[in-house]
Length: 109
Image (cartoon, rainbow, N blue to C red):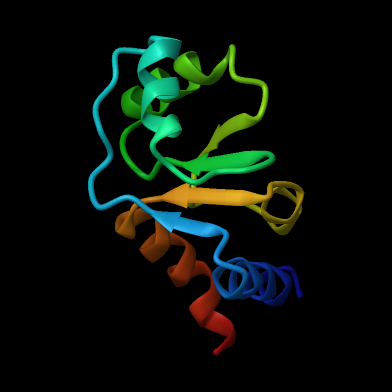
């Protein structure tokens, strides 16, 4: 049931054009200014969820950089749940992150 709800929420984000795929995730050192500069180039609005599929160290640098950005949250696409998807207006990830989420929901297809 949870997997079906997650699939429905993701389909809704795609349909409403609220899911953004980054071809390549830029490397950052954990500075808020780096992340803010990158986000300024994206058409984000409201609360945004950054799903980082890479190693824990890459995710940690994005977590550190997002601490002072109140509308940005960083998560792992392998453990995202439907509540997180619905609570955030936009979702930003990479093709690898999308593939991880697809693996979780393809079981119901």
